Amino acid sequence: MDDTIANQSFLWFFGSVFLGPLIGWLAHFKGGFERGVAVGCLIIGLTGAVCGVRIGLDRGEQLRGTVAVEGRLINFETRRTKDVDGEVTVTYEPRVLYVAADGLERHVSGLGGSQQSKDEGDPVPVRYWRDNPDRAVIADFQNQWGAVLAFGIFGGFPLMFGIFFLGVSRQPGVRPGTPARPERWRPTAANLARKVWAQRFIVAGNVLLFLSILGMGFSPFEVAPTLAAGFCAVAATMAVYMVGFALGPNRSWEAFGVLFILMAGFGVFGVGLFLLGMEG
Image (cartoon, rainbow, N blue to C red):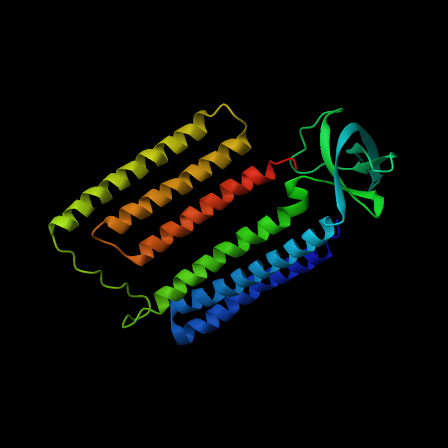
């Protein structure tokens, strides 16, 4: 696939990684520490989000003119390269055979990220271009949409942290760096009942977190799906904790925001691992 847009986006993103902290450092002199962190994170996060959208639209446009077929791994081609010191490096490049609509057999080199365990004769998903059947790509998620997922993760997290710290810095009547005074809790019957339920949700979250870690340690499945399921289970644990904190007497949107970011983070990594293991 044409990676021109992806390569440009990587340059933009890494530029924002250097520019964001610099502008945030300048902003903190006027708005305080939280405002500076918010500005830096928002610059990085918004740049990553824009890059992810650009790459996604570009990949969608490229794949619009392709046809999906099932190829077959036929062999591994040996390639020898010699460096300036005369040392020879031997690599084995997989060759995948596919048949286009015209009935002719063609080959594409390489394997997708989820296809590395394939053996000779195993099926491999392929997409070829309708107007140029000689041009093809391995049709797994990592080859087609991996860059979009990467920018979604590395842009989404700074964006969430930026919004969080922006909210902290905008609290009325609170000096930057000083936590807000929690709302006074009164021991009414309704509040006592909510407190009991809050404790139950916290205990349930602790049990779920323990089972998640235990399950990852004793899982009979491969590493990738085990980690994916474990991360999703931890994300579910954060959601349970959020309910517990929402019902408890010491409610604060800061704690709720941190739990939400953790939930989104573990959830995205878990779903991302599932997607990277998809073959089509």
